[in-house]
Amino acid sequence: MDTDNDDVELTLDLEPEPDPDPDPPTPDAVGDPAAEAFARLEGELALMRRAVQHLAAERADIVIPDYGPTLIDIAKRMGAISESMKGMAGHPAMQMTPDSIGNRIAAAAEAARRSDQDRISQARNDLNHAAQEMRSVTAHARNAAEQRQQLYQAVGGALLAGILLWSILPGTIARTMPESWHWPERMAARMAGASSRWDAGARLMQSDSPEAWNALVQAADIQRDNRDTIDACRKSAQTTRQAVRCTVKIRSPR
Image 1 (cartoon, helix red, strand yellow):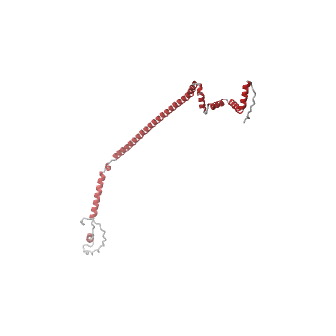
Image 2 (cartoon, one colour):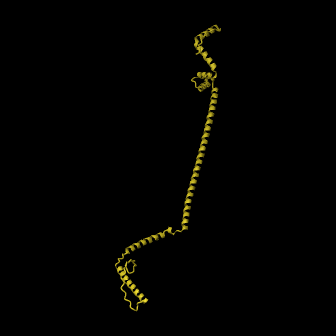
Image 3 (cartoon, one colour):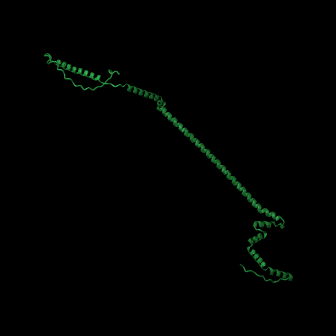
């Protein structure tokens, strides 16, 4: 590097050399102010000359460092920063103005609201469809319930009609049959749940008149207990053709 064109700041501690003895004033200069001023100026110039000479000697001894690599590194970094700044300057976001940013924000908000409105509309449609299906299922269930109710009513009516018909028609048919077939008695015994028509008749008589049934039972007991005596009295009455007196035994009530 050219060191002659570099500005270097130096701090020099200069000790003033002893001033040379000025030439003795001539008799003409004694008392002359101009001569005295020139004499002082000559001394100051001599002092300045010595200071400059000393400064040149000190400057020749200064070692100035080489800033070339540092400057090259700085230049490279500045170039990289410049390229980065160019890339940033070319980015679309750096070219946007506040108005364009506001327009883009408004467009994004509008798109978001439109998406929300679409979702709300879809949810409303789904809800309406679900409600329609629920109404359809409810109507179908109501129709099924009404059909079951109608079926139950029809079955109940048919059953009641069958019961009425069965209660009337068999008796009518049985009464039209010959008496020797005993259909009414057989039907009565079956309806009473008795094993024979005798048991059925006894049950019917007992339910119709308990007192008469008790008297009949007592008479049957007397007949059974005095069968031999009654048979003998009956034969005697048939022989004499007159009323006879019979003595019978009656058991005491339990």
